[in-house]
Image (cartoon, rainbow, N blue to C red; front, side, top):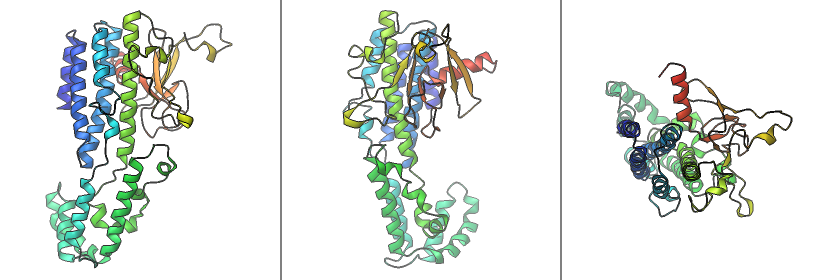
Length: 370
């Protein structure tokens, strides 16, 4: 379905109706947001992945229009920003997300089925249950797995020990979920990842039932960055549509386009209530101070580290603006090198505008690969 949505958005934009394409993409973002409220890890991860990718696609449609037809009107931009409102009570409302419960409930059910209360694993039931869990996609391996888990039953932790591991892992995730990403607790390793391979083998009922859900923290952070970035980038595009010039600074889009300048979710500088915004500049116009000895300021060189293809080098002139988040290192690096990842190494920012998707497509076209 996601593929069909993006194909239809492409068709609408190509037919000269980018506003309709944006509406469709917001609709799909809403659907992904509904999925992110589901109680299984796989469902929530799917929802967050598609919130992230669809918000980038929204910016992509706006960027392509800004470079070509300029068919988008200010009313359409206002409507999209309103539909993506940052208000906690609004439809997107990422602050309302809760940590999923179903996977851990499933693990507890497996323990109840396969263990004697206050005792050890029941070999026959344990081997039957675990072999089915581990071969759901590989049914021909069921018999060999049954023998493996029958032998493993004798080394399993007792009922009390395995339940303690469940409580520790789940409690760690739930406590962290409600904390600021830069709280000291969130800088420590996750309890799930701290348990060594030997201990995992002795807690098979837990680790074969529950995969590592720590990735949800990174996905939620990226979804927040994408949401904040999309609202502000569209606000900057709206400003340009109405004035035929780029905003002098990011604060200029308030209050006409957004109610308030939001904090960059990646920026840890929150002391005394500070809300550090995303960084914004127009190449050449705003970069002269970086090169005071240069006789003429050149275009901004942007190096993009790609996860799914060759890296890209782009030269940006004063016919567009650059908007970026400081990224995981929480440091301003002028978007010289960007990597849109929650685990990017120090020195790399997170690019909001121009959208990485748009620049990658342009690069493929120029190389004759698209």
